[in-house]
Image (tube, rainbow, N blue to C red; front, side, top):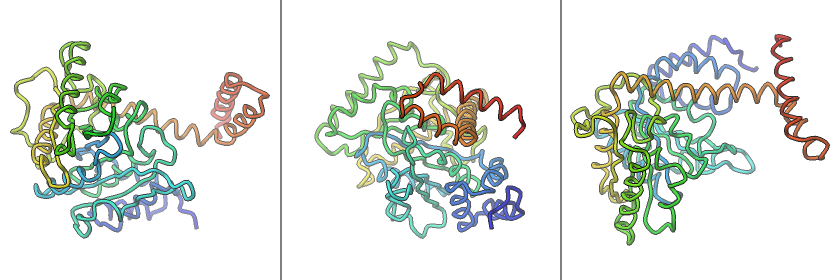
Length: 358
């Protein structure tokens, strides 16, 4: 029997999630990922309990060791007695549409730890390396009680920047020996990075990778002027919540030498051996503390929520016009129409849909 949007079980599930029940959180993630009836109502109930969490976006070039480094950061957060959630975005299976790697392959060291919840979601063709449901799954994990939620993306590229609209702190991971990957970051990720990690720093080319990043930061500063309030992305850094659990912030690590802005630090790591992880966690905490003032937090939260509202509205719009979009696409394929005519027709369909109240 399909669930109704106001089924009492929604309230029951929300209560179970917020009380920290792992099975309930897993069920809630399935509801959200599969978009079952009741999922939206569930998210409405969970959202007020999710605003405390610190969201760390982890992105970077494929092969840089993002998953291994994220796992090491999870261990460091657990050592600080933080509850941790991980939203690992995987490529979609061309057959099932589900995540290829899945929860069980990732971060096996944390299996059985009641303070860690790991959820894989599929991109399902979404641009930017982030699943459409990743933000909603993060809400579930935060409401479950996670102090820190890591959002690990598929990769990074010209269009793969959505993590900056979800995360409080964005970690960009690169590695030596991956061709022109550092140079490719010029496409836009440089302005989105709050912290850089040069992982696999024991390999040849690590010094060159660090120098390239340092040069890019200098050139960026010269181009854009002095660092602006709000973080390394100069107004594009969006805050997840106005508050944060005291344990989640190393307040003593706040940057007092740069009151007007933030310069992304570059940290060398060897995630497989845990080298540099302490320094990296400290750098992330410094950024969190530096940008946690009420004024900056409010501005960043507003920017982030505006971006999320646009995304959610686009999802609703696509759902309302799905049949019409398919028909328009068919006409374009047949060559009997053009995108300009069809986009105007879709707008008229939406307007008529709204005026009819249906």
